[in-house]
Image (tube, rainbow, N blue to C red; front, side):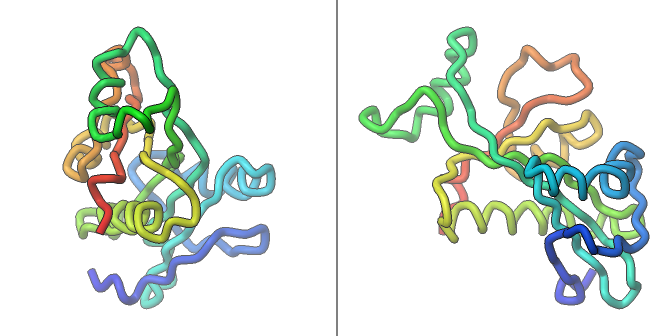
Length: 177
């Protein structure tokens, strides 16, 4: 896939969303039924990637603010997160950005577009530095666990291992150029 033929832009109330369909109906429904409302209510910002040659939405993702908070029951995880942070700078919470949704049109799946999006999010929050952000979080669907693991995400806890979604994180300090 030629990524130079993609146009990325932020969804707004006037955006005409081009055809899109992925394997997860909930992700399709969010794009067409909820994304503009979430944007209006300041709950999430959605970005579209249109493939200009085919006049289709190739992918989309939504971002929102998040933070990772210390849980005394998960000391092992907290120690793993704190490992690379000097003692004097350690806190009870760390700033994060959450990927609320990330979906690739089934016509464009398997071409590295999801990884391309993740790499751009990682770059934007680790190198552009418009705000302090140490982690990327996502409540990953079972079907997406391996995708996120291949892209450097780790499971936050084992407590949710039997749930439909699991909290995963990426430490942005590992991506700084």
